[in-house]
Length: 82
Image 1 (cartoon, rainbow, N blue to C red):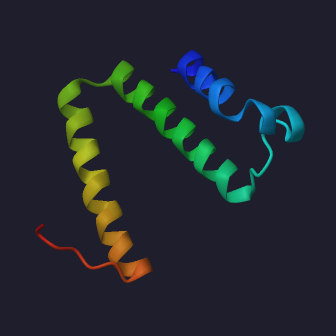
Image 2 (image 1 turned 30 degrees about the horizontal axis):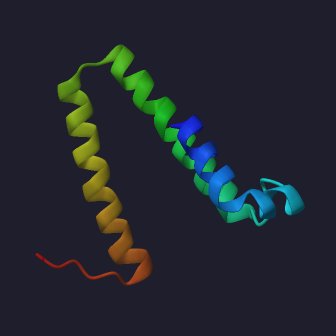
């Protein structure tokens, strides 16, 4: 993961990273997404340690349903069957 990603940065964006730095352009929303994903990964690790795969499957299903519901409420997103 990390090594392959860094290799891609070195191949495609080495000049910009050398000039501006690796974190150039990161704003509060980007950091929020990074921290949210990291926190989600840590929560999955805790669930896998103290529960089993069936419980993890139920938790994933509930999170999909809940995020779909909240998307329809907060962002006027409409669900479709396709």
